[in-house]
Image (cartoon, rainbow, N blue to C red; front, side, top):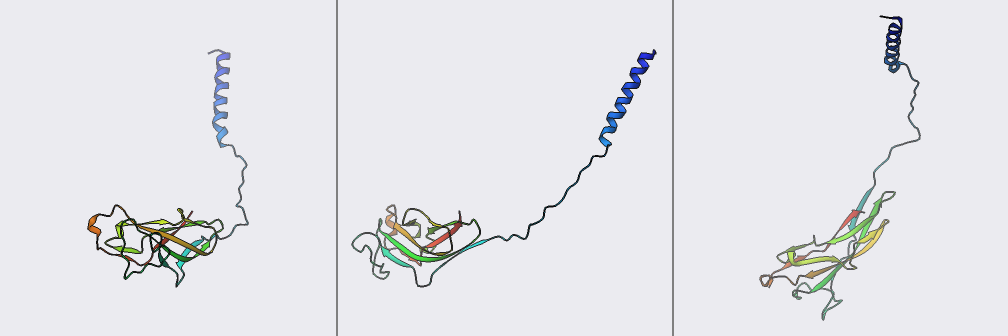
Length: 166
């Protein structure tokens, strides 16, 4: 082997040793944990109907605006009545907003599947702060109710609302 070849091999070996050792060289680093935090607590929401509220009234027809007479009134497909109640809502949360959406959870009996609930104003009630909210729910006796529903009953214990975070 000539001197030039030996020199080239020695240079290549030295470069390989230096490259292999480059990963083991110490590098400076440091870390710290930030300060100024604290304990965070989740908020909540709650809804209750005010005692003494909750009225069923006819929406259309010859008794429009009158209270429903549960002992004497008889409904037919297409009839519409409304349930209006005041609900106390408590929102606890910095950015918490919610909606109050009516349901027919307070309706049972044979006619329940044919009693359709919708918000009176066409939309759920927007809730942005704690306070009382009046919610009206239209209930319509479906025009698709079959003849077999004649003389059947439904129990209207009150419409319900669902309070859901928006």
